[in-house]
Image (cartoon, rainbow, N blue to C red; front, side, top):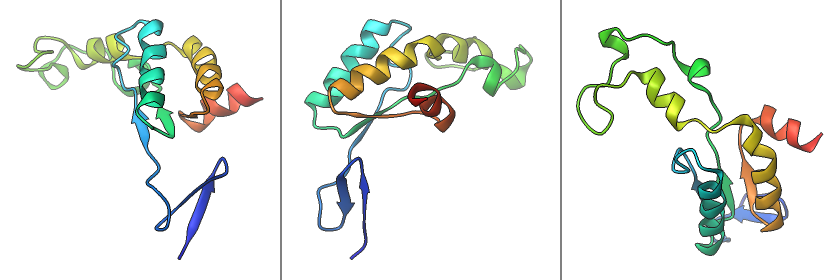
Length: 120
């Protein structure tokens, strides 16, 4: 049987699943919500919390042509740029959230570049 370890936590067929809680944009632009999500991830038994790290400029362009507009649903009438702009997490939040997750013994998953900047 193969196994791996993440921060001394063994993962493999003989061990419980490794649970990653996804924060996504559920913080709604409020860092206090982000802290609460980390708290809930820990209380729910998650081993890690994952964040999506982007800005509107890193994943789309600011266009309002039909190809870039959302039709129907909750975000209907918005451009993709507007949606991603409202859902993104400010870069400055990563360090305090990383430190908070670490204090709770949760792994903090974000793109490698962000993790390296937090560690070094």
